Each structure stands twice: as structure tokens, then as C-alpha cells.
Image 1 (cartoon, helix red, strand yellow):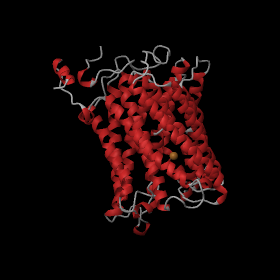
Image 2 (cartoon, rainbow, N blue to C red):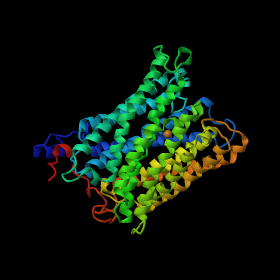
Image 3 (cartoon, protein in one colour):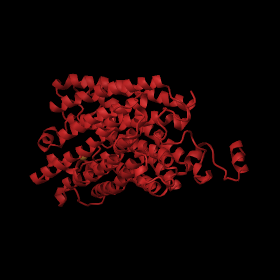
Image 4 (cartoon, rainbow, N blue to C red):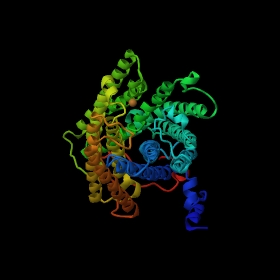
Length: 526
Ligand code: CU1
């Protein structure tokens, strides 16, 4: 019997498995949060490698590195894996680590289901990545899976449908866990309106997931039966309608973009008060703004479909409802700035990423307003302007918030300080690189360059070359991030109880990692 096992046995607790079995069977929210984050990092690098291959092909006009269908496979899988493999699991990792700590709960409400939620993900991840090696290659029709293209593809299309079902199952179980934990397991006296804002944003995100994942599952199931069982949901020749797929898909897809950004709002809302040494400005308005964004996200879906020939009344409705979302989003940006106003600001790496988030996410928000205008959108549909827009939202938005959160909580998670100099180097390469990749894409889109195309007309060359150089700067600087994280895990200066010397209560979480397998062994909160 190992020392650890004897130790546990001496205290009358069950013997815990070690090694790989520990990770396979763990019900500890911290272990599971850690696995989510490592999984997200691996997927980030996989899909990031695809992005670098895309930028390599686009460095020059003409075809030089790959066949056009392989290029389309890269753009499709880059999107699917970044969304479902990198960003969403990373936020779920934060949820697992932080929500029980922030609520004073011993663990998540359903620890065994939590384990299952995580372990479904590597299965789906292997299916998606492995599909590159199937006959015909991976899915090439775009991450949105529009028919009729998606109905015609090879076996990897069926595998992708199954992978999406599995990832949806994982998300729904994770959401049930988060909602139940937040509603039932808060420490005495911690009312909902006193919760750290990160818990609020995840509570609302979890409701969005439960409402939309079944819709996506329905859409891909109809694709599956159209492909294999002779139905004609989306086949006009059989009385179906391919546009109906777009309606169903975007009824999921638009709330999904808020699933990808609301937890980022939550992370940033924890960080800015800490480094401004002031409470968050307008806490209640932040909660109401988050809820408003979530509710509005269900009535804007057809702004992705202005080019399909919507009736004018529908175009106007979806245009104005989309613009309405700028109001609660503006409230949030105002509150973040007001929190910083007259604060005792310091600019460690988490704060730098949070400030970059506020500035650059707002650029993505404004280009979203531009695209919300139906007549403009019809011109810019399927151009690089759209690519620029959603990468400002997802890279300098979601991903930067993830970086901010990792730097912010890593000292509490590992007990060690990370290397601040390396963190700042990572920040500056990321923020400069990110803008070099994506800012020129606005100009390419306005000039008419279509997205998902491996070749382009000569007048687009310069901006594409600039974007590709930026992509390599951004991509390779992420190795610094991995180095910083590994160094902090292995050792380094001991993290103090109040890492950021913030005001008491602003850091919102326990000072050091709690004992292993908290849920089974920890006494009830005293
Ligand atoms: Cu949308």
C-alpha cells in the first residue's frame, strides 16, 4: 500500500486511486477543472496549428501548399474545434475551479456527473481530429454545417454529427451541475445578488446552454436522417427547405456566441475591481445587463441570414433587435471603465489582458453593429469583414479573458507566483500580433475578399501577407504562455494569501488549494 493510501486509511477515509486512475475516476471539482483547462489548451494548439496552415496558404495568391478541399477542411475544423474544444471547455474549467470556491460549497452538486461531463470531451475531440484521416478527409462545408453541402460529404460528416451530440451532452450535464450548485449550495447568507459576478455570468450561460444545445442536436439529427435515412428536411427536391436549417442552426448559433463571451465578461468583472482596488461599479446593472443580453440573444438569429431573401419586415425586426444588444453591452463596458475610474490601478498581466479585452472586444462589438445593418450585411456577407469581426470577439474577447483568468488565478491554483516578466512579454506579443492578424481583415472584407477561399485576386496580397506575419507572431508567442504556466506549476515564489494586495473580499476566493478530494473528505462548511 502506498504512503498516500495508508495515510487516508489511517483517517478512516476510502483509499483513493493514484496515477491515471486518479484522473479517470476523480470527482474533485479542482481535478476536473484542471483537466478541462489542459484539454482546452491541447485543442487550442491543434486548432491554432490549423489557423497557421491557413495563413501559410494565404501568404501568397495562388495555390502552393494544399488542395482547395483540404484548405476548406482546415477552416471548418479550426472553427469547430476552437468553439467546442478550446473556448467552451476552458470556461467550464474556470467554472469547476472557481464556482464552488466562490460559493463556499464543498464541490459541484453532482461530482460523478461532473467526471462524466469531462471525459466525454476527449472522445469527441479524438473523433473530430481523427476525421482528417478518414476517406475523403474531415468536414469541409464550414463549421455552420449548411446543407446541401453537408448532406453530400463522406463518413467524416456522420462522425462530426456524433461528436457534436457528445459535446452537447457534455455541455448540458455541465450546465445542470452549475445551475444546481449555484441555486442550492451557496454558503449561508450568500444571496444571489451578493454572488461574485463570475457565478452570475455562468448561471446565465448554463441556462443558454440548456436552451440551445438540444436545438443544435435536433438540427444535426435532421442532417443525419437526411444523409442516411431518406428524409428530406433540408432537400428542396423532396419538399424540404435548406433555409430552414439556417433558422434552426442560428437559433442555437446566436445564443452560442454569448455562451462563448458571457463567462469572459464574468472573469473580467472579477479582475478589474481587484486591480483597481475598488468594488465593481454597478453590480446590479451588470447582472441585469447579462440577463438582458441572454434574453435578447434568442430573438436576433436571422441577422446571420440577411442574404437568404428575408421579408423586409423580418429584416427590420432582426436588424433592430440586434442593435438593441448594444445597450446592455454598453452598460457593461461603461461599468468596467467606471470601476477603473479613480482606482489605485496596477498593471500586472491579468489586468493588462482585462484592459485589452475591454478595448478590443469593443472593436468586435462595433463591427458587429456595422454587420447588424441589413443593407450593409448583404454587401459584407461571407467576406473577411465577418472574419475580422468575430475574431475580435473571440480572440481579443474570449481568449484574452481566458488568459487573464489563468494569470489571475494561477497563483491560487498552484500556490506559486508565475513569472511576471514573461507574462508581460506574452501579453505584448499577443496583443500586437492579434491586431496585426485581424485588423487588416476589415480592409480585405470591405474590398470584397471572400472568406473560406484558398486563393485570391492579386489586389488582396499585401493585407494577406501582413495578416499572415501577425498570425505567426501571435501563434508562436503562445509558447511563452505554456512556459509560464508550466514554470508556475513546478515551483517558484510562494503565492501570498492575498496575491494581488487587493481590498479584502475583492479577490473572492480561498487563498490556497484545499485538500485532495474535497467533496468526500472535507467537513461541512463551519
Ligand atoms: Cu448572431
